[in-house]
Length: 580
Ligand code: PEP
Ligand code: MG
View 1 (spheres, rainbow, N blue to C red):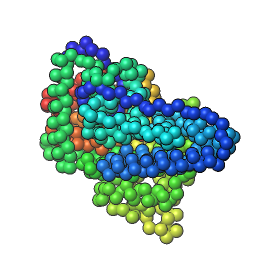
View 2 (cartoon, helix red, strand yellow; view 1 turned 180 degrees about the horizontal axis):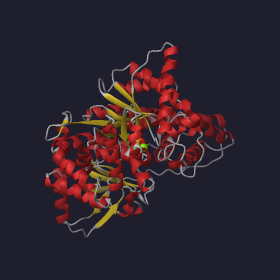
View 3 (cartoon, rainbow, N blue to C red; view 1 turned 90 degrees about the vertical axis):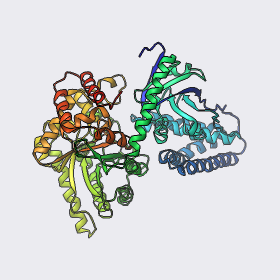
C-alpha cells in the first residue's frame, strides 16, 4: 500500500488497531508559591490536611475503577495511597517546613527529590514509577492551593495523545470514548501501557517529541501491534486500514468466544496453553482468558515496592491467593529472578558494569541462598494449602552445578519443615528455565537432572545475539525468530524428549502467532504467554496440522536470518487464511 503521509514510530505497548481524531491531554500546570511562614505547626497541619484530602480522593478513584474489575488500574491507585503514607517523604517535607519553607514548596521539593531518586534506578519498571510520585505530588499541591484537579471530559471518541499520561490525567476519562493512547515518552511498563492493556485499547509509547506537533483533531491511525502512528493518511490508505481493523475485530471476537475451549489442532492434538502471571492482581486474568494453568509465575512482585524482605507468612498468603485461581491445574512458579534489569533497593545489590551478565537469578545461590530457602519453604507450605499441581523452576541456570545446588536447597527446606512438624508438599516437580545459551547447549545433560524445562526466549535471545533487551538502539537486532535462537530451542526440546521430560516456553515468543506453527512443529509441550494472547494463539492452533508445522520447523532452521524466517512464517499463515 502507498504511504505518502507521516508515520511516527514508537514502542508497541498494547496491541490492536484504531483510527480517529486526536486529543492532546495536557497536564494541569500549577505555580508553586514561595513565601515566609509564621506558624510552623499550622503549616505542617495544612500539608497533612491536603494529604488527607488527596488520600480520600485516591481511595474513591481506586474503588470506582476497582468496581469495573480493572485490577491493574486499581493497583496503581493502591500504589498512590502507599506513596502518600511514605514516612521518608513526609519527614523530608516536614523538615523543610521546620526550616521556614512554606508547605507547597516543601512538599513539591520532597516529591521531586524522591521522583528523581526513583528515575535513577536502572530498572524500567521502577524508574517509570517516578510518574506516579509526581502525580501524587500534583494532587496534594492542588489541595494546598485550593484548586481542584480537573479530568478532561470527552464528548466524542478520541485518540488520546500526551507527553506521558499519569493516572490522574486518565482517571476521569470516559474509557468508552477512548480509542487508543499515544505518548511521546514512557516505556512498555508505563502507566499508559498498563491502562491500555487493562482496557483492551491499542497504545504506542516512546514516540518522541514529534508527536507533540500533531494538532488536536488530526486523523491518525494507530497500529499497536507494530508501534506505528499514521498521521493524516490518504482516503485510500484509511479505507484499507479500516478493513484490516474490522477483520481484526471479527477475528478477535471469534477467538474470545472460543477462549474457554481447549486448543486442539486440526488433526486432533491437544496443546497446553497456559498463562504468565506476575502477582495477586493479575493472577485471575489467565483463567478468564482461557489459560489451562500457569506456565510462569514471576515472583518478583513479592519483593518489589517494599522496604524489607517478605516474611514466610506473607509469601504463603500471596502464593495461596494466586493458586486459588487455578484449582486442579498446573502452576509453575519461578524462584526470584532479581538482578539484570530488575533491582530490589533493600537488598543493596552491588552496582555491576554488566548486570545482565552478573550476579542475577539462581546465581544468587552463591552468597544469598537464604532468599531461595525461604521461598522453597513458603512454596512447599502454600502448595499443601492449595489444590494446584505445583511445580518450581530456577531462572538463569547456566550449568549443572547450579541445578544440583538448587535441588539440594529444596531437599534441605523439606527436611527443615518435616523437623518443625509443618504441613508441606513432599512431592513437587523441579525444573529450570533455559534462557542462557550454555543451558540450551548442555540440555542433554541438564535434562537428566530435572523434571522439565521452560524456555525463556526473552533472555535466550539477548544472550544468543548479544543484544541488551532494554537498549532501544539495538532492539531491532533482538528477534527470537532468528534461526540461531530457533536452533537452540529445537535442541532443547529434542534433548528433553530424549530423557522423557516435557518442555514449555514462556518468553514473549509463545504469544507470537508467527511462531506458533514452528513451535508446534518442533514438538513444544506447553505454551505460556501473557493472558491477553491466550485466545488468539489457541485460535491459530485450531487451524494447524502437525505434519505441515513439522515441515515448516525443519525449513526455517535452514534459513539465514530472522527476516527470512518471518517471511516463511507469514507465507505459511497466509496460505491458511490466518494472516492478511
Ligand atoms: C524470559 O527470559 O524469556 C522470561 C520469560 O523471563 P523474564 O522475561 O522474566 O526474564
Ligand atoms: Mg528471563
